[in-house]
Amino acid sequence: MSNIERTLSIIKPDAVERNLVEKIKNIFLKNNLSIKESKKIRINKDEASEFYKVHQSKPFYNELCSYLSSGPIVVMILEGENAVLANRKLMGSTNPKDADENTIRKLYGISIDKNSVHGSDSVENAKKEIDFFFKN
Ligand code: UDP
Ligand code: MG
Image (tube, rainbow, N blue to C red; front, side, top):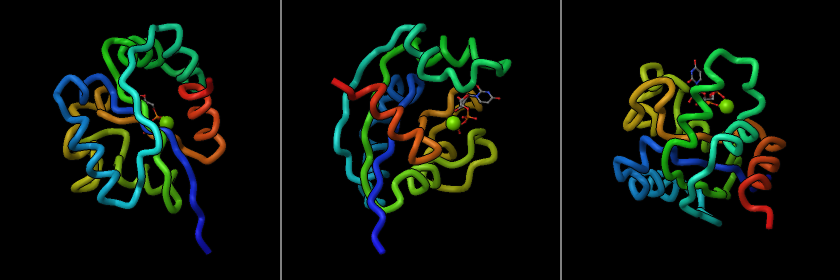
């Protein structure tokens, strides 16, 4: 049975700054995820804090929100078979040091905080995150 899902992907400031947007998009496209929407934006710290509020109790929350609002990001809606998990597999582990070979974070991540991409972790969160950036 086919299971087409949508998920939210963000190319974070460290990767946009290093001109990795097309390289990362090509990884999605080569792996059967289509890019339904894409926009380059900059968000402020309040918006980043809202987006990442599930992490508000974590010690890294303040730095995480400062970081996501520190420069341009590219937000995308990816669509494809099991897109939520497929994207998470292409991203690799949160810490690039632990990520599998050929994952985006292994290839391009700098550190656990500057790890180049965000991806929704469930279908439910994907819906919320897509709404956050693309509701009009
Ligand atoms: N993060 C961090 N320090 C940590 C754990 C996470 O700076 O010890 C950042 C990192 O950028 C990560 C984001 O917080 O991508 C969200 O954390 P999560 O555990 O949800 O990881 P992800 O879902 O992005 O793999
Ligand atoms: Mg997460």
